[in-house]
Image (cartoon, rainbow, N blue to C red; front, side, top):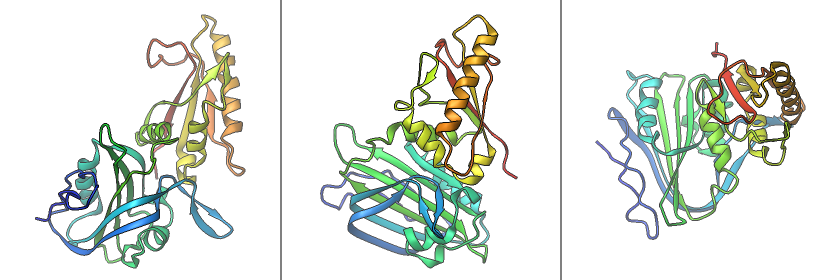
Length: 287
């Protein structure tokens, strides 16, 4: 079995997380390159003047180790994806998507990974960006995983291990936390900051930008619920939450679609002892 042991032989490169490829797969391609202005997409895709572009991406210099595997056709996409996800779960997830939420398979195959063999149907794809950072060092490693199923039903895996000393988490920390939270079906969202029962738009910028960058499919299934708890008068809590919901709805409007945002006062128990307004989310199941 092939084992990705880490970039030990590359000068100045952080040792990477040990990752095992799927056992019943063959190495289809391997590249090692030193790159500048390397693209790492950390958001959903949008269409601008008939062109598909990411809402947010990193442009980095560093060392790329790319491997592509072709998996035996008797194995399914979920089996293969889960094999890799389990190995990346302990790392910080900067962005992830699956199926139609990932957008155009042609974009990932041709624009990002430059490999036409990675073109498939949009409902059969997974994408994840995970970050590993060495304590006390400016070196960090990004794991960019793309798993998809071709029209022949064969699963292909592209794993990029990109090591860099460029800033990665500047402005990304909170956005990464938000995206990682949104990877679940429901919960409390970080990054919702208020002052005197008004939305603090500057402090909530990461939340607003992340919500605006969601795919159309994600936005259609996402329900945001604002809760206020600081009054013993339930009518005042409801008024507070509705006012904040209106403000957040305006801030997250992308020019085409308003998010589903409602004020629900103290109709659910608070996440903790904090009486500050809080934002809860629920994803309606995908069809």
